[in-house]
Length: 189
Image (cartoon, rainbow, N blue to C red):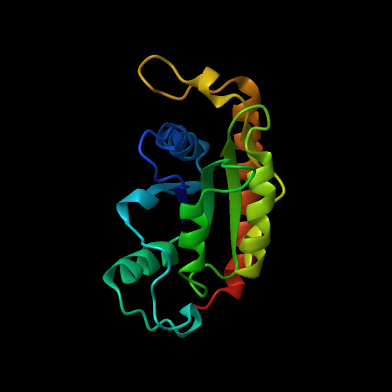
């Protein structure tokens, strides 16, 4: 049985390019063969700044948007967060979405597909790892960094990676499947 990998589009801003990068990664993961990838777009959940009256540990969600987000996150065995770098940091939409839940994330691995200018989003990737570990998500060291990502976009808006980006994706997916299998016994049935 294939493990379910949520490819999460972290940016929600108008004009974002992350959806193109995420679509490429979802297709790449499907071809890799170890995962059943699912594209998850944060913009479709329309999460306001965290607005639940109770702590997420209680899982007593009051709002429909939280209940939908919880159900989605709970279905995954692993995550690939596709994220830009904003001011050396992950997008606020991702920080907010992560903070909505606790138990649904626990004991699952995550890989980071970061993109940006010269740094390829690496500063944001490092910054978000602190939050991931607090939620008991295992951020694997292997990731995909896409520097100067606009150079990989064709005229139709499709992301076209080079060999180095693809090799990074293959390595990250290999590690994600190992961690997903290793952590599965720790997750409640």
